[in-house]
Length: 225
Image (tube, rainbow, N blue to C red):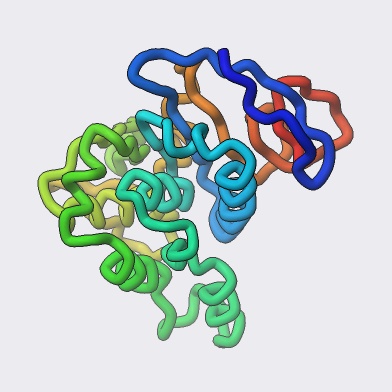
């Protein structure tokens, strides 16, 4: 195993031995809506203290908004360009409208698509295939699907939009992927690849994930900022 950290990170860092398997380990990001901004701080810290944990990862996985962060890492977008999440700007825009996110003039899906088109390189699907794992929930039976191969940049965008589509909140007609309608991946598997022993789990909610906010309980396998 390799220690996750050896110093302070806004508080005490617990040492956790991460079992590594060839060719590398996985970083898994839970869905969390606008709270995904938490990941930017966590990743900034890791890149400063133990960059090999991010750069050496074999796969990145995520559900809902967590899939956007995973996609950014999989296609090697610099952390400074993580405007894809744009949580604060989008939240402020929504709050300025009567009805908020339910306002007829506001489309969360369109805002996400616009960001993806600006931020994903033309060959993003090439870099993402077999390196990115996105959790989707099939509408007609609620079954989970993990997508790891992408035929084109547009298909990659569609997969990410499907994973982020929360019914009513994002609209009423779910987007499609290869002829099927899918919705928020968090509804069926909010932490893809979490069953693997070499996965490092991120969540903005306190609990038993490896990297998550501090709470009163004692969890020796957590990194607790």
